Image (cartoon, rainbow, N blue to C red; front, side, top):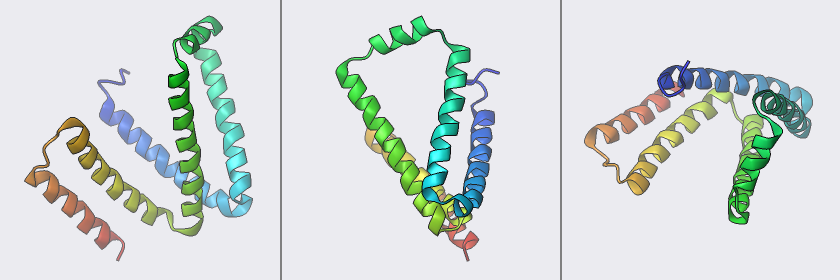
Amino acid sequence: MNLENDVIIFSILLVVMKFFIGILRKRNLFKMGLNAMMLFDIIAINLLLLLYISYNSNIKELKDDFCKLSLFDYFFAFLACCFVALSVIIGRQLLLKHSFPKLKIVFTIINILMSVLLGYFIYNDKITFNKMFGFIFVIVGAYLINL
């Protein structure tokens, strides 16, 4: 499968996986506790990623790729890692205190809003009547779902 041609299929797959990730984490969060859950995630995810990298790369290519980055690039890579860690901590706190379906709806609304705003400010994308109507329609639908 070509990722570029199958963007809808892979997007649906990612959404389904994120849904199950949220449900499974919510289930185990109360059994394990917040810090134990994050530690388990760190160990398991890093192990799986290391296995994936070792299967799909060789050491020389990895070394060459790391040498391409400047100190400035490493700073931005570290900053991105800080944002990922912070989002995991905040996400787990929210998941611990709120229902998963409600959080999913709020995240979806914010994601759509941010996509429209970033498209407008960064890519000079026009905010049309249809986009505004669609966004309002999503908010009303989310409200009705949460009644």
